[in-house]
Image 1 (cartoon, rainbow, N blue to C red):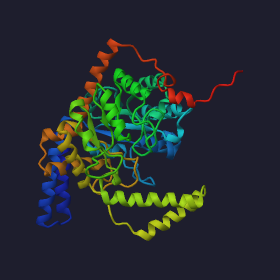
Image 2: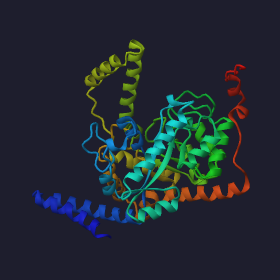
Image 3: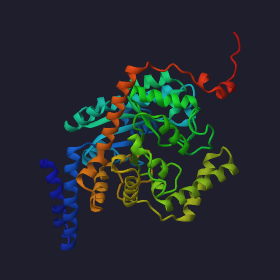
Image 4: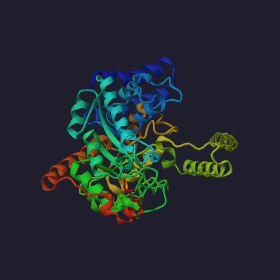
Length: 441
């Protein structure tokens, strides 16, 4: 174990002594120090890979994509707080990060590809700006190499299939720009797939949606099923010949949120080789928090019905609603561990990972306040009887295996068939019938 790791552990005990902690407290500190030492040893041997972090969106909304307006070495002084920076990434022992290049669903149509390319550009420029800490990665071997060099392997995960503007050509060019997974939908249906949080429109995947999955497998772009409806999950698993992922979802049997993964889908993952990367979104992982979040969402919709486009009035009334309720329920790190264990129980130890959604959420679970706290989740699982091998699979071993399987299958498929030139207008006749007829010029 590197000396810097031992120093960090000793510091826990030194601090406790300096504060005059009683013997019992010192015992707790020593126990936590020992558990963290085991965790750090695991994370030195296998890269900890987080499936989803929204730092690129933070740069877009806070700084109009001007990197010099946010010092990513330390963001703790910003308001509102951010969950991620280089200092805390180093403390977390993170080895690989999928930076989410998210664009809202209201950017569907012309301009969507431009917006997602701007977010991809942020990731590339961020790694160029901090080369001592970050390096772009495109393959599983890249992640391993960069982790061994002591840097964070930076990958691009595209969130929302609306970004491809219904074009397989755009999909391929986004892959060429560095995107290594794509979430098929976001919060609303796209033209070829149903979302988990929208009214069903297509009954899962359309024929073009199926072709999107086939083309992603051919390229080696990982299919991400977070955000999609259960039927879309099943449809994708029916056609996928490479492992899928859920980049930031948890277990629906534990918390009945539509963004979580039902047990019948979890049970299919061993045959596919895919993984669910358990997320930290509070209302996805704690049922009491979910109910409170739904009550607030329902109130927001009621207020919009009353006040229409007067968003300032809606927000003012919503603040009064919040003050009147004095909500005291909170999600915790224990909730996340419960979801991880349920996914393991149903799908197996080879099919679980971590997808925090840091900097894409405002509230966070207690005990997982920022990226630096990631090792404490592993310490919690160590307390529950997880072995070093178990933790290594959760940390990154499973994701590396899934990526390598996608890469190998892509080589096979590329040798067998060319890129698809299918068009949505050809495959989805019902959609074609709704398109406006061009006026002759």
